[in-house]
Length: 204
Image (cartoon, rainbow, N blue to C red):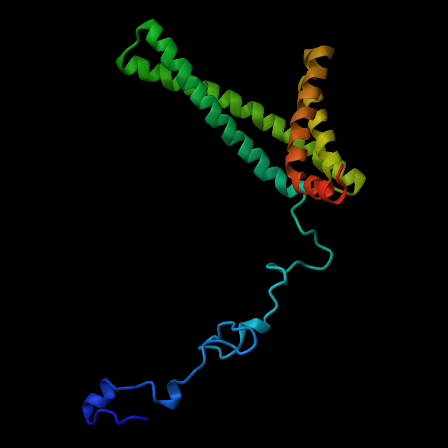
């Protein structure tokens, strides 16, 4: 070690150089040049990075079931419905108050009425649909003992049929078809990786 400063200066400001053996610490491992940790004194290359990030109890599912997802789906549907309905109500309110010639406080009151009324109606509609879909999904998962795309398609179709069941047979069938179509698009979007891998394994 090189000569240090003497006296009190040595206590507060010691001088070091590259010739000090204590400073000769390798920063990379000799196997695959992985960086070494100067604090824990171990080679991170020996750590297994393939372990799961979270610890699951034995027998527990790797993802949340339909019952756990139902709460977020219902709440999200209500918020989306309120946002869409509120924007639609604002547009209709501006249009109707302009045609009626309302100004000032009267116009603001009418705009609030349109936003609240249409926002609440749309939020209620999407919330009811989400409750129906989640209920059918939980029931099908309990009956079949599994959760897959078939449950999604069946739950969405049953939701459309039930929602339009009081409007006649024709509209009931249309509602079921719309539910099936939306669910089919959703399932295809979630299974795009599986479809891509299947095409690579079995080319036409």
